[in-house]
Figure 1 (spheres, rainbow, N blue to C red):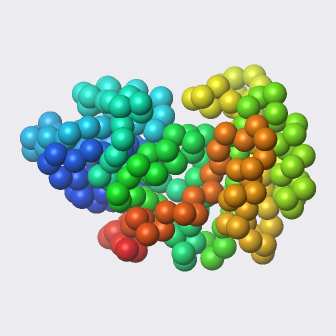
Figure 2 (cartoon, rainbow, N blue to C red; figure 1 turned 90 degrees about the vertical axis):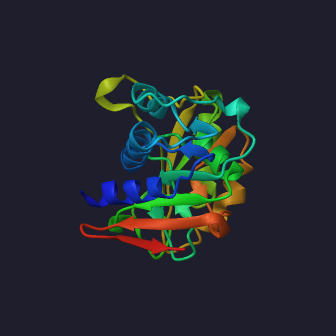
Figure 3 (cartoon, rainbow, N blue to C red; figure 1 turned 120 degrees about the vertical axis):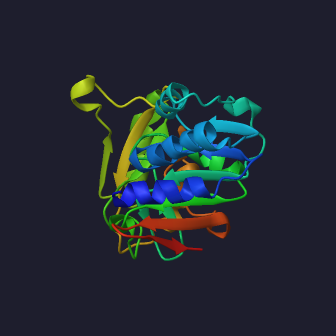
Length: 229
């Protein structure tokens, strides 16, 4: 197993019969989804409810035979497992490289326990060291959002391009744009949570700063999983 797979498999071992479970998005969360499906198929694990944070995970879970509830049907989760782009010593996170942070935060907010699955490269002393803060915004408000993020101290703000698979910007599962704002890590990036949320047109963003009490970080290594409770 590589580091990500070890973290995902460990997280799946925390799932118990009768739980309501949220499935995250991204390469590390995909290992969690795969292992949960294996346990359902081979061990007879029974789950009260499964919910997905993105269309990509819906496709994976469906292909593996996992039945999913819609987000409208979810009012509480026992456990949610997902990756992160960065985590700091206070277990604050930057998420959203997969542009699914709005649905992810929705499921985190409903969860009793949040398992953050990472490899050692995601550990930082200060948020913003390696990754920008992704901000999902209404398309018509993207210019205003970029301007206000610069006013908050961002040194670079760009509408995320889709790349070779599509002309134009990345479009979220909600049909919105994603703006990446890179701040100086020497500043208080985590402290911008409320200010970014207050910008008109912002739907959500990738700073997860209010959930440390329910977070367990699982850091996958080549030979073990390091647990940060």
